[in-house]
Amino acid sequence: MAREVRRGLVTAEGARRYGVVVVDGAVDGAATAALRNEMRAGRPAELPVFDMGPPIEELLARCAEETGLPAPTRPSWT
Image (cartoon, rainbow, N blue to C red; front, top):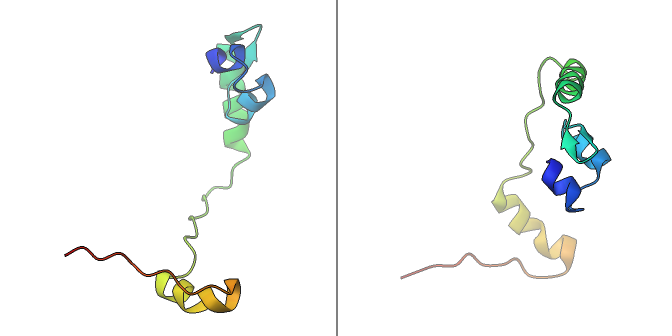
């Protein structure tokens, strides 16, 4: 992550959101460990399950109503 910060691909604050502390272009191991412990302590005991949304059939059925376009057709290979 320090390399990405040095290259300007991510800010030091952006790295913190991933749980990495970068100081003067290098990862601060102790501060990173402390930050990750803090982040871990702030999480709920049980992480939520990702909601994939409705089944594809339902999305296709609502397509015209919601977008004004016909539903796409699935490709078929012969």
